Image (cartoon, rainbow, N blue to C red; front, side):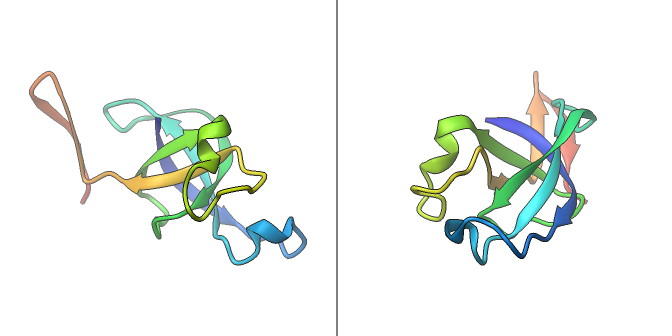
Length: 96
């Protein structure tokens, strides 16, 4: 799993039928302090995440293991919204 910030959304009217009705969000990987890093990529949202949320993203073949994404051509899926992060006993991120 990866940490990522939701930085936007995308709309695609023409897509694989298995993606019909699925929200596609633009995310960018983040470190454990919640600082963005890396290039943006698109992930299927399964948990009603929104812009500014720090989320858990699963990529690769593991992205196709949720009930929503099973048997779909998906490489990245949002599987959780993070409320807080703690590292070495210190809270490094807390959702506002």
